[in-house]
Image (cartoon, rainbow, N blue to C red; front, side, top):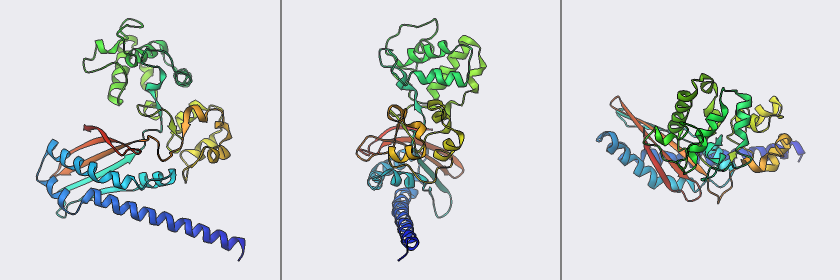
Length: 309
């Protein structure tokens, strides 16, 4: 048998296994979202928070078994690409769901510890961001961030302790995009500098994890961390990536420019280690829309932080 024929057979086997995995996961997801007519019937006869509670309860019960099938970075990648949707037979109720990794950006909470001491090299990323996207008063913005993440109430400068201005804020961490936008609004109140609004924050910072999963990293944050990477390689490992990197070595064979920054900043999914996922569910019942967001960890497959939207 020729080398070419062997290669074709190997390629065919890989494709077959891929399709089989997708079929298994799709079947599991269909079970989660439909669960015969039980989930949909319950949903049609309830509204608002009660509807969300019922669907979230079913997802919480059924998703862990499905997630247990994820045993590699490749499995995770396939899983996150699957469509998640369902609707009732009379089309009065429909559900669209998605799961994604929040580890494609830098966790802003990693810039300092609870005492407000800078944590390197992560703290330096802020300076790199402001070098790429200049603002009028970077020190003021950094002071507000540090005063939010540390646990004391001592201001680094006048007006930088955000809990003084937002009663629902608690020192210790920035939990979500809404809280980060409150920090931006505080900076604007102090400086009147609109340049802060020109920074593509959603492509740079998030609020989960210790490191960035290179398979879901935004090109913007990769180029901030590794400014020497050429544009072609950057696109190849981010926007044009066709399969997941399953190890540090495979990544560096394509992007050796990341060799010095991989360990402090990046990871690929490894079974048995904590890994957060975020799920979003949007529903329509007789034309009325509602939804919720939830967090789930791949290691112990536990739900947390159900947020009604």
